[in-house]
Image (cartoon, rainbow, N blue to C red; front, side, top):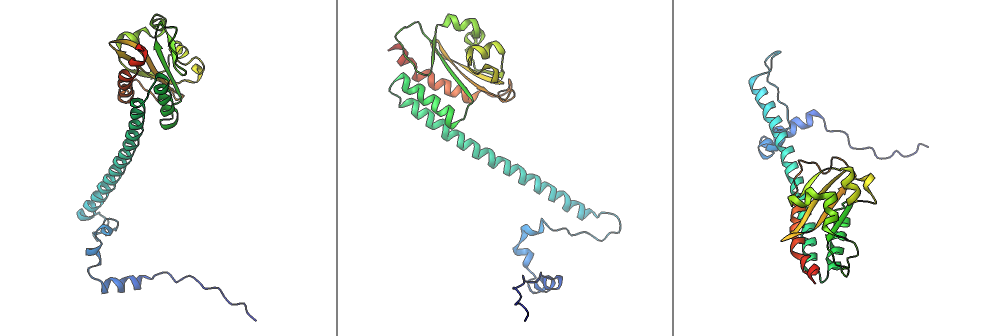
Length: 231
């Protein structure tokens, strides 16, 4: 006795069925204009390509290019939205801080977890022996000038490939792994510190790269940390 056969998949739609359907639906392509952009409708002009066909091909290429551009714009918009949300959380956390350690912990938590920055260093310049800051380095500005004097004098953020001497000073435990870095002097009347971030990729922080984000965070720190340093 023969075994029962399993149900076979439906047969593929034939050309005749497509033709019959389109004959019954003469306005099909009117209702589906996007489908026309995907169709190829060669003109019968012998071995040459007709002008109409060439124009359609150009329009199709432009359509694909515009789609790619739109997709890239949407991706950039989503990235900017995520960056805005992370930055907003950090700024609010800094504003809500009630102590120097609270503010510094908020900064490091955000950089490590939200922004996933490889290496972060915060140096505060002070001569006080009583100031305590768990995750920040406390040094005199005279000592800092020996290593990053140009940064302190210019008071402007910089970024680019890691300089060996500067990396050793800023990231002593990871200097051999730092490929590129970005620095933002902290200034409130006078320079009171520096915020430095590093990445393993030597091309991540390029000299031509904008420093808008680091400048913005630096400006927020300029307005939140000095009150704790005075106390």
